[in-house]
Image 1: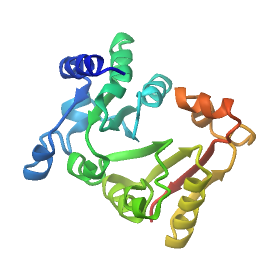
Image 2 (image 1 turned 90 degrees about the horizontal axis):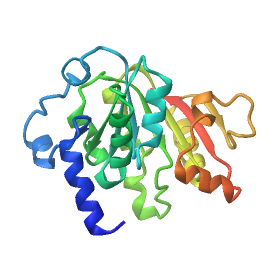
Image 3 (image 1 turned 90 degrees about the vertical axis):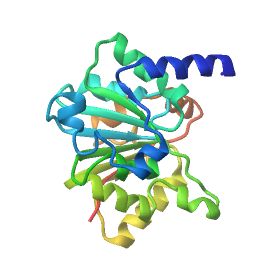
Image 4 (image 1 turned 120 degrees about the vertical axis):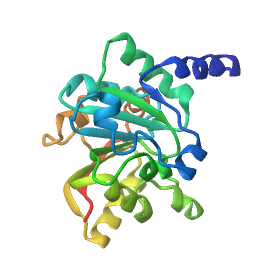
Length: 224
């Protein structure tokens, strides 16, 4: 994507009422005004709120919002020019139960109040395979504690990935820390028990992985 196109998308994002772009200073130096009030102040209802972390183009968030109108969805990514596509699609289709936040995922506990979120999706994250990159891995212990803080008691986390490394690392961590694994498999399209929201939605990149013959793995768990 050219820089001219990126600038155009950034500008459009500013005008979209389903996009929130807080500065780091807004989050770290003061109380974020929507924190604790996403249902009442932003969506105008008290439906369950579901996050997609590292939402990319926003395809998964939009598809989930279409499939589950009884819930609110928020896609989070630092790359606004990417999720512009999802935000625009949502507006064009009149979907008022999905929005997007441009921020770093490690700041989510400054954006959401304790027990404000019902469910989290982590879709095709960078596995950060190198040991030095462990701190950026979205299912490491530090991130899990942030998720636990904003999730309601019994809240669900879903990990969908093409990385066998990420799948194995996460399973090992969950077992080691005593978290509750509700569902896990190494190839969702060969497993008849895979949930429909896992197999029924395919992102652009997922289709590419499947064309290359890469199995898509899935874990559903609760953080203890």
